[in-house]
Image 1: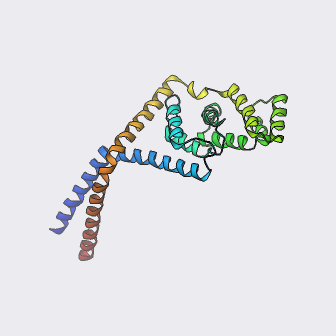
Image 2: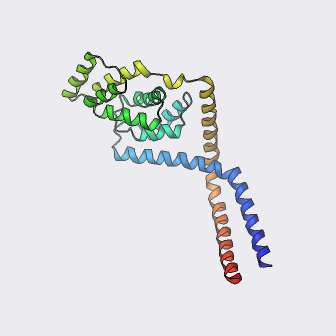
Image 3: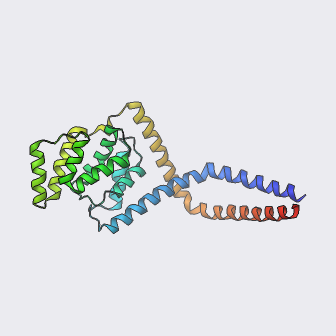
Length: 232
């Protein structure tokens, strides 16, 4: 009867969507996430007037490079780059790399370390004090240098004093975690990158299929409603 036909259609639609999702849709989703991350980076660069003096392509390249030598995925690094684009280009690359090192050193997530470092660099006069509270050792000479540079309105030089001390204490830690942990993380990152590449190629062809599946599901939903009203 009508119920058997409806059941067959639902099973067919469910089976088709499951296969489609596993074989194709996961790849397109991976590309969509990367595309979204890049779109947000471009929007922030425009909003900040390209304060970091770097293009979205350069930021993407930096994120991909760091993801090949640390356990952090390039999308995660891109997000942190996006939140740090007001930092000047003279210290920007070191700041991004150090946020990864500090996350490993303090056992925090990348968001926390990026916020911490970003605050310190945006206001060096107060920032080095906040970093000292979490265990970063600034000498009296470094403290005087930071304050002098800030008084002279030379914020970049003050930032460099902070960056250099952080590099002395934490530089490269994110590349030196356990070999097995690093290998597993990088394999996972590489697989996601592979999915993104495949998904980029598939995306233009997937939209019509998704529309067809959506239409089929909508039809079945309408038929279900009619059947339930009839049975009721």
